[in-house]
Image: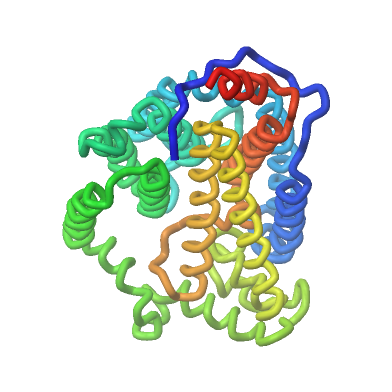
Length: 396
């Protein structure tokens, strides 16, 4: 893989946007499924808490509209602009995560300070921060390709930035978001050509730090190990997981039917957020669950396919961004599904485009809009990106 210099393109509105029909269809299908299962999973708790069975559905629908508007905005912005702003975006992400921990700024819920209120909308800061840092890592890989390939310092510099962000996330605490961020960064560096020994050295240091954090906090250690035997403490530490497993087991092959879930009736905590997949599995069964997992797998593979196309077009920044977003979608989905099935400890991560969570949904749709812009620039024969690439090739 060869590396091209950073491209600085003027602003360019697509007269006739070339949308990726597969990516767009997959995203729309997941949003539709998410609204259906959210309506089923949230009605009982919404009626009890707010006197309105459609409270969460209505709020999520507003987020869908805002997300699609934001995605359209991303489609109109050239990728080169994000490349130029990537450093400032990373700085803004770190500042936002730090400000979140200032008393009186962040909103605390269930012992975690992860949210801020903006114009009446509760935003989980880790979501936009993650996207900003993915853009930063992509820009760094383009600017410092040789350093990343040949020097440990080139590998270490972006990891220091990401480690600071991860430390701020752990202070909230948000172990799940920190895990996804670090893993996504490592995947991007691997694709960018970082040496295997650099990964091994950093991995040993990171595992040692995580082990120390887990042992130092009995609460965190209990959460990390409780999933191994939830039936040993089914009414306290293992309550969420046992109820999730009961829901999944009740679904059997074909499910109990839409709206017929029993576990969502105040048995399964967070049925409309972290454990919405358990409700889906109970109502649609194993076959429905396989179909939903297939949609996520198809989405991730489509994003990686777009990354390969961008690399072939020598649009390296766009390629790295697509890799980062694909790893983010895939890893977060895998972790959420693993938590619901008892394969992983509880992390507090939503299922992208499915779970209730307005900031998560909006940022996922924003990322989809960014991917659609990448597809447009890769596919548009007359785009400035393609014309400049052809001129470079003609000079060789």
